[in-house]
Image (cartoon, rainbow, N blue to C red; front, side, top):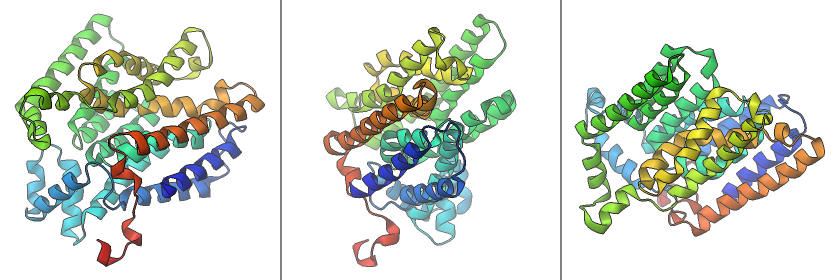
Length: 360
């Protein structure tokens, strides 16, 4: 876990230096270095992540296809990265590098909108980066597009928001659920919004049925009913993912109700905070599906920690709170690597740039 620790220590140190200076941006070269470092850390990972073998098998299948067949996939924008890598004579690592670049562009754009962007980045590392972006390639690419959209939400109109969501859904269809927040922002009556939201969820369900997505996941995980079938809808660790966003989300909502610091946040982040809390009961019924949805709610926890200089009020308390937050986030990473049922797939990190050809 030494490489993860070094990365977290670097980001934590930069956040500590900037925590008493709201919106400090005099470290731009180091911020850009961190961007490149994270892109390479994620993109050139080697045999890391629960989905490594799945994507490797998909890449082998792509190698036998013509470039034009990329459009045979529903989520063809992601598979385009594989076809590009294969067409240029590279392997899965270059496809991963492309998707990690898209993810990091969105992540850094959103963190850059926060009072302490390093604190926001630190909050993203344990679950959003290490366990999500370093495994779920398609959804991480979609999340990167949506993070960029969230960072520029109020600079765009409805049409451009839908374009970004459309692009993200071509990486992972679950990104279409972000349309819910477009609906909530419409200047229409509550009844019209409820009707549109109901239509959205109905369309999402019918789309999944039409494209045999449920059958796809059954085959992917080798399940055929009975007790094993519950694994499709129940995933250990999913509740932890959700609570990582719902906890900060609840504190944001409480602060807003009390007229506190959260009143300075925009409506989108408040709606996302409310949604993260509202998803908790659903995790008891279909934790895998809820976990997938919660991946798009990481802006809630990232925003909460990135706003420490705002809600901690004084400089001295801000540094104390930031220290406590850093210890908590490092503890989350340690717990996930050593005690989760999937930590073994991540903890022994290796990078393609630093391995010999004999160990491939």
